[in-house]
Length: 345
Ligand code: 1CP
Image (cartoon, rainbow, N blue to C red):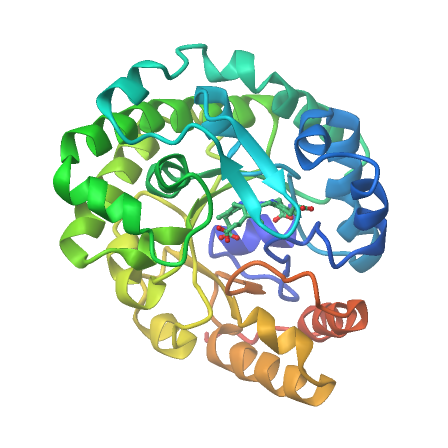
């Protein structure tokens, strides 16, 4: 068994596992070399390219888990969003959902047909090149994917999403219901294709009040988790921004692990979280752009706060940024992989 899998089930490990959100990406020259020749959509839709990019950070750093190279917005595109990734701007959707009639135009094609290339990429990776490194599959949670489908792209404050939620909750609910079905089918397909773990991303939960969080994050997540077909009991992790406010609600979901953002006091959560829930996190990705001394002391703080708890996986508190120097990542991985937890008798 890999250390990632042992830790996610809260079993002891000889040294801590580490992987990084967005570990494949623009900070890697070998990623940029491929990116120069392809559009982002082309990269995620070509199984051989997506598999190669998945492997890049594993080869370079010896991380303890690989994450499938794809994006949470593949599901939006499968449902009919006209999605493009624009250099310097991120995802842009040409036909945002704003009215009931926008909803009627959405596609009914089963996810397993539209996203067959994801299945093919997983099968390719699991046919040998990953060796013993576990493969994490993922999906965006309904609220976060809905946010992009409504907003039409990235947004600092989700103004249009919140307005729709408040003035036309029926449209929001219809979209979320469709996304619950699509997300559960998508995750089930990834499990069937052979992933070893799943991570659900609900990044933009941070914009919600507690009652809104219950309605638009907790309920849909419960519905997704209920519908996922998971005969192999593949462990499931949930990441949200805003975990300082929401982590104890998320800990009541039938998931194995909470991925904490960088704002959370990890020591506090490690002391309070139920012992059957693993924790993952939570270095501020900005620290990777500071000095080696700052990095080392911040990593030590996290290791001392949570490293001796059965069920801890080191990660960032959000995705790695394109400006991170590679040697800082090497230092981070070396320091974490040298850490041998001491468990209380
Ligand atoms: O131009 C480029 O090269 C594309 C940059 C890029 C990359 C490398 C995007 C566009 N997506 C990805 C990969 C990606 N996205 C992965 C791959 C696996 C990995 O290495 O981790 C994953 C898991 C994601 C997930 C994702 N995409 C999230 C959830 C996690 C998070 O960071 O909050 C979100 C919100 C997205 C949307 C998205 N796709 C791409 C960008 C730049 C964004 C974020 C835009 C925004 O901030 O609104």
